[in-house]
Image 1 (tube, helix red, strand yellow):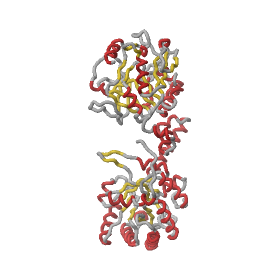
Image 2 (spheres, rainbow, N blue to C red):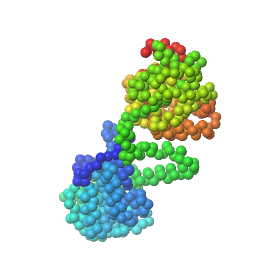
Image 3 (cartoon, rainbow, N blue to C red):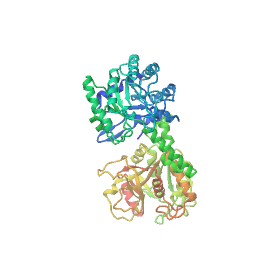
Length: 566
């Protein structure tokens, strides 16, 4: 999911959105937000389900989550100015309607000022509960839940309705009879009183794990509405009776469902777990997979400059790193310098990259390094190529990785469309995988680098595109009949992707003993061994699926084939 900073909306336009939604939708879905960042996330999150795009319709600014986020209990101790600041953060970070948890509403005179302030800010609805000030949170067992006299509370509603200016602003009465133990009959009695006083709807609250008592209320509310000759929206908050679905709530006459505290509770759990992991390990590395990248947070809150915002949709890494230090007994000169129709493989790679407007190309040379004399690339020497393998060569260019890079094997040909598509994909670590392997599985004399993915490849033969898919295993020992893709030898690492592989590589270099995935030691590890370690540590590795468009020079027979292809 890609998030973005939302554009603003004028208060009078936002204020009317909730009434419009109530007219158009069977049920309006509201989720809690407790600060600007949670509002950005909730405002932009979308999920696809059965050809329908699902999203939340608006926000609930809860007194519980607002108080908890500031380190206070939910006992109406947070002042109005502090509440207003939270509301402003959410308004500035979203373009959807807001429903405010108004607690008891305070004294009737103070409630009037509260209403006018909320109206001016563009809030659509306030919900106040019929408890005596100062209230106690309804979900906490063992607390005294004193309800206000219904006539007193009804008067407060009437005064609020009389002072409001906009027809689009709504005051909803929250009935606590099921919480206090007064029962269904008292709840319906109060509902009638509050509706007659001008309430724009009723919220019925319950802390039972079974939804039976709120469904009983809904049936009685329907009867009451028929007796009154009008029906106002019915609101519920299924925090404890959380097995009931939105469809079931619609069937029982509910118009608004509020998911009242889940974002704060999720953040609370994640923060505790992350803090514990850091304490236990005396460092932050193990906690990284639980955290969003810093840059992702920067994007969501609009911290990046214009250039970085442009790169949000089209990545443009300026560097390519090509490890070419190894030797092959079948080749007298480095494979990357093997001529194909008179032009070395490396020169063809450089020309293709230049066509994609990539000019900064770093080549790590070792065996036959004197052969690497062509322009268009910078060279780094690995004089220990016989002792250490490709992973060591790659990290000879560790300082060049800053800001992100494309990794390419030195013995492959590829078309420029693969690189162009790779630059436009989204992800921190992306491997280019060939789906044609699935159509042409056969025993060959090459030790292929095969891949298993979370989702199977499409049966359709397409050109170049990115699928929503991720790698679960990569290696040469994967059963050829089970593999989903072949790795092409091309990969992309964002700035955060570089951070991941650098930390893993340097940690393993210092402390790893024995076999390392398919290698007999870390010193002899391959690139794909590192990728498997990244996956095993819980980091996501995405794919760019291609259908051919590349060719590997594995042995001398491949030279003839490549020259024909060229």
